[in-house]
Length: 171
Image 1 (tube, rainbow, N blue to C red):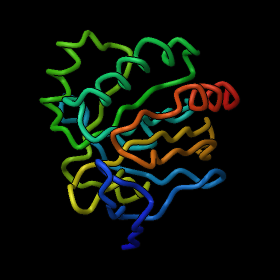
Image 2 (tube, helix red, strand yellow):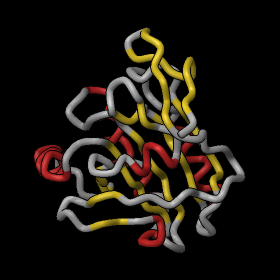
Image 3 (cartoon, rainbow, N blue to C red):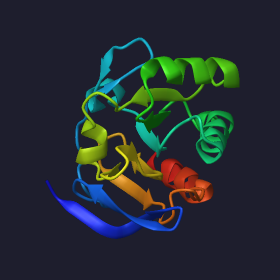
Image 4 (cartoon, rainbow, N blue to C red):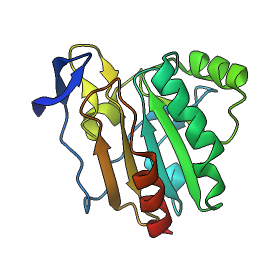
């Protein structure tokens, strides 16, 4: 398994990312994630949609909470052809509880805790913490990656505007 060091930091400390870096133009890798009802979800479940993967370490942190709420309020209004998928290592039960408490209904939360397949297939898994690093991946209707952001410092926010523009361009 490929490992990349020095790409990101967590509170200023260098971390190691496990998995191959995803780049614009790549075919989106498949994954196995769990939804809030413990059903398995794969890339094929979102076929024909523009997919915004909003990747966060944990919904129970301030920056992740704000990122997910922002996408719930803003990006989901782009088109019925766009789906926002928030991916974290949080347990599906915790994601469901958080969404209920936060009133988040437009974003789909998916858990990578079981297999870390999204984390390793997209290169977002932090080896030292077994959390996902913060970032965004936009995938068009044909499953081609059109935008990628690995946030250099995990505690910083993503570039919301660039992600939305990439999703609009993929429509």
